[in-house]
Length: 436
Image 1 (tube, rainbow, N blue to C red):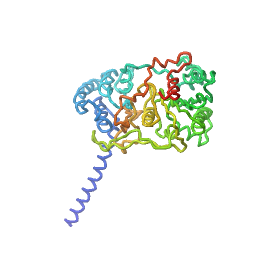
Image 2: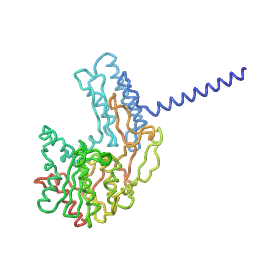
Image 3: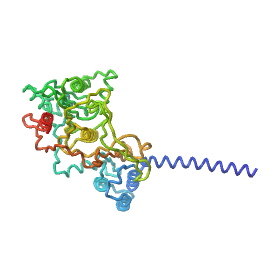
Image 4: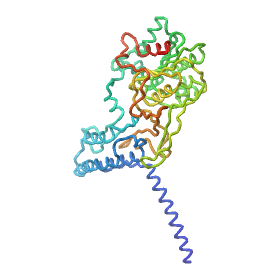
């Protein structure tokens, strides 16, 4: 009997240990889910622990993350005293602390939204931090957005927006005005444009009879194509789809394509799958644009090996012998920058414009699969949006936080678009015609 009881006790201990391990593992794999704070120090420690586990670029940072905890925890403990004494916390105080902690991160995809639940009723309770937006303001070529293609459809639909963004019609949009000018000169045709949603504008045309051109404000082609395949017939969706299809037809069916221009100025990114519909049209061979790696464990420096980062031809494609030109600017980010890296890796590729935003780490998967990435809750007391992979270019350079430098640099002063002239697009056409 004693032996039997002993055996049962061992089995119970084993079961308890298994349950305990599973519970601990679940807590480790979701360190960001502590949302029921009572004190500012608890909020800080939750964010610190989540970053300690989730951030994929610690080896690129100069700051020592453990020392950040040692330095800033006393500051938040002091705020605890105010809460315990029933004094409200002015939001600018934790906002300044978190900006010091997070505002200089290399990951330019990263974005943090934090709520000060201890603010007074008269004070704002939320603030956000974007390290990328903080960094680009320090660049000597910084300037405001000037294309605003994402707002065109809103201006057309809601007249109140027109004065605010100084856009009243499609013809006021930079590249449309330029194409219309060329059309009047007999140098452009087949001009089409549309916006399927707030974040998806396409402008396409044919320049001088043999140079297909497309401007895309965001990489959302995957949704556009899927929606059309499902039979959705929203007018804005269909005209945007037609603008893309016109570009595709010109690429695939023109007898002599002199070159192709893809315009991703102010394009903040989107779906990786869009490569099948855009750059995937222009080659019949896979292109390795660099390498990527991800976290493979819970430790700050648990990284996978670097693996080739390759893109393949799309289901419809054609080998373009002439130059493939992509136009970038300061606000080209994420998938727009990945596209620039692909073009740079192509033997006939050329990047024209400004050095890009510097946010080309990949956003994919969830924490349980990648040990990194987004944590918190968008509707909760904090939320963080982070890259899950880091990328380096074909030459082995990590450009996160730096951006892709064009082969031909154009300053903002050279692209002020006076009198309908777009000098950056003109430069792209000249390059295709002359090769220099």
